[in-house]
Image (cartoon, rainbow, N blue to C red; front, side, top):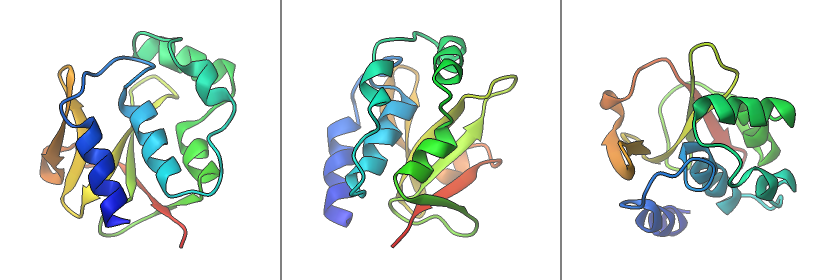
Length: 138
């Protein structure tokens, strides 16, 4: 798994954040699919290019009855607590929306996140503390 995580992260770091193409959730969904035998849901291609901000993302996800957390469960992830592990995904609430923000965990202390318009790595201490942890079932 370490090699897959490393290659994936190297392919994303430095790339531009683009809503519904290369945003936090589409990146996290692709990250989750790396470790799953379950194919990407058919609606994934339908959401690409359909929203240009968080409000529109919320509308699209609601119209398709998609929850970010439910999608990670589709890939065999479950909600857990405790220390972060490489391959985990953390999710955050966005105030007044059902849409959640997701970030892949690269090391126990590092997440892949968009800062401004570019994806980069950040120490977990730089991330607001109220998040859910999703871990892949072994």
